[in-house]
Image (cartoon, rainbow, N blue to C red; front, top):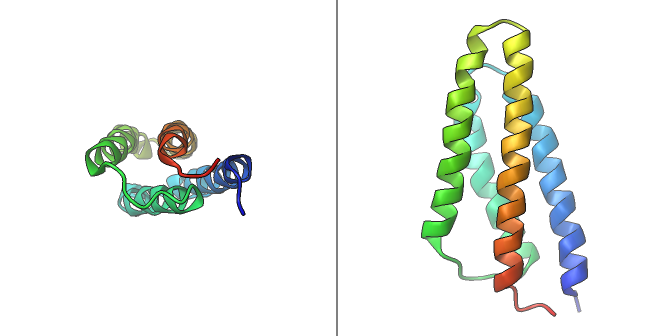
Length: 114
């Protein structure tokens, strides 16, 4: 049986994988349209890791909205070749990491695991 500690480790790996890949994808101008559904997919993965079947869609939509808002603002960096693209990639990874940590905390609290 999976413990909460096991779920924590698995969720951190999931988050790190998404943060890393979002940073790479974030380098591409216009990538916000790709990152938005990817953020939703990450949230579902973390919920499954913690075996959370039901969670507040309002909370989750707020998290996605915040992440997408941050990415949309950073999209303007795409107008600056190379340096802007690097900045946008860093923003994509950072926003994913911060939002993911909040999601992990939320799912951990809702988890039936002990």
